[in-house]
Image (cartoon, rainbow, N blue to C red; front, side, top):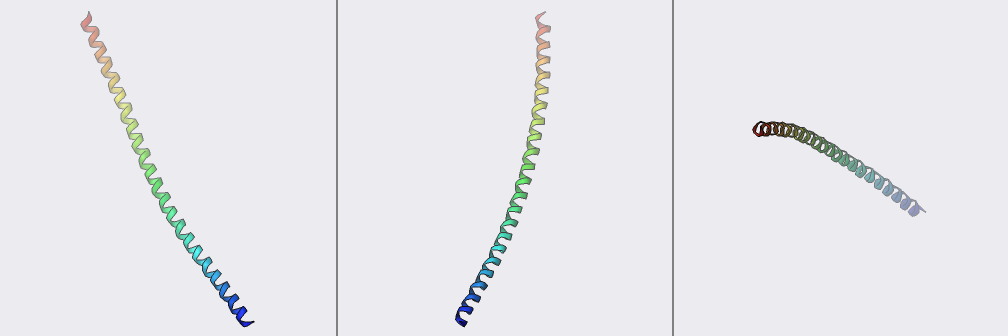
Length: 81
């Protein structure tokens, strides 16, 4: 009977130890995922800023080209008269 109780206690102790290891591993995994999430958000923010800058430059280039076409068109009209 004592042997059965000892085996039972050993099994319970092993189950408790396994549960603690699982919790520790889960906590570590969660921390790692939080770090990765923060890095992804930082990268996303950087990409959004880059795209905003690219769009701003694109709009500026469109304005410059429109001005160039306008000047070029006015030059053609002057020479055609």
